[in-house]
Length: 230
Image (tube, rainbow, N blue to C red; front, side, top):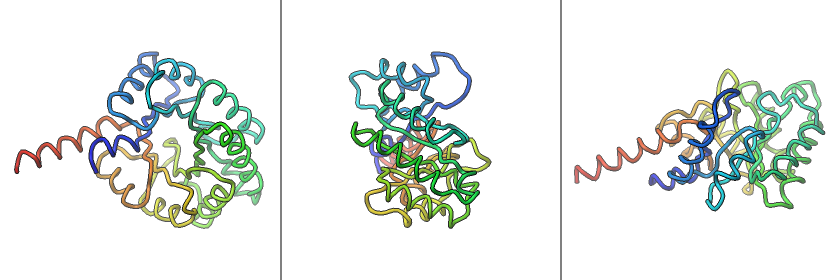
């Protein structure tokens, strides 16, 4: 995998609750410079990123129901529509884990269906965040199948705010659980090149990380070093 190929599947992330305007400006500048797939930001930053990324190919991803997923079905639907109206081109929505664990998978299915129905007609990519660290293998498979059946574009491992993030085992499980039209995004704890490549090898088509710059620079160093030895 080349540096450009790796950069093209990285969602460059800034989801902290604190910071200054320069943080978002730098995020967008780096995304353009390295050719990242998109910037992953909270909905309040969508309009700012639309302005900063005008005329570029970098997508704008809004995190919905973030990070706990404990909003109502209706709130997540509104938040999704609002983010799209403001310019989001991708939506990453956190499922209601407690509803799933309380024997109410219908709530999760309605969440997913609402988000997909808002996104699909407008060409917006949908990603369903499981927060795998809280789920059993059976629950992970069940949500993946729901997401695939409802037409989501991706299932995603984690928010990065839980006690654990993506694992190779979860990526493999999720890849096997979804159909061919649904992809897997690995996020949470992907901090170095080795981990990123392991996730890709396991079946991830996107990598969510706030360490994208360091990851692609490390690959560039390795490639440069190998070339010098020839």
